[in-house]
Image (tube, rainbow, N blue to C red; front, side, top):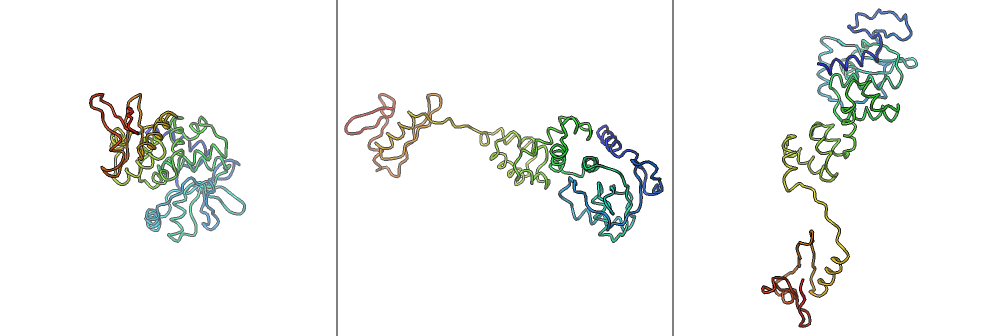
Length: 304
């Protein structure tokens, strides 16, 4: 409830003296230059919001809303600003789209005076307040306020009514790959999954995101999977020049590929062979007495 109250307060601050009731208060007068008014507006004169943070619209839900509008009308006015001979939508695109489907010619609207910055702020607030935007849309909206209007995270926090840490966490989602962002936008994976994926290397993050979708993993399932040996990331130490030279010398002498895997002075010596008759089996052997590998070349034995 506290979060909701903060968001409402932020929206009211942006709207100024916006009427809180329905369209029956349409006759509130334009006595002050910065007050808002409510009226029935021709839908054909309204263009969509260039700062709309929403990128995905659920057509089924819009059709359901259109059916409701046919029966009950538009209960809550949309929000617009004057632009030239017409209006630009600030908030309420779902209602506007549904009204067009319902065959309405006019729609109740609150007309306000708003700058580009305020238009984007209100659009984000209006959607976040109703929890209509997905996490990526919210993050991109914040990023636009930063990029286009030079907002700091502190200013975003004050305007949106959310803690700065929440703003920062939201913006971090944009560092995920496009594929993962698409999965978040499509509600295939949650923001909880995304926060875990943020801590992984890019390729592993995409692999685990795909696994989450395919296996319908919960956030806890993902955490558990990453604790298993199969999904731990390992960083291979680059081989020294001596190791490379020794691999090359052994491969040349044995006539087979030799790989040295060293870890803090211990490791494995791997010899690739194709049959038991391969020359490497005749030249490379385990010396049980000395308890070490040796290979024989030109009647001389060498150990490793």
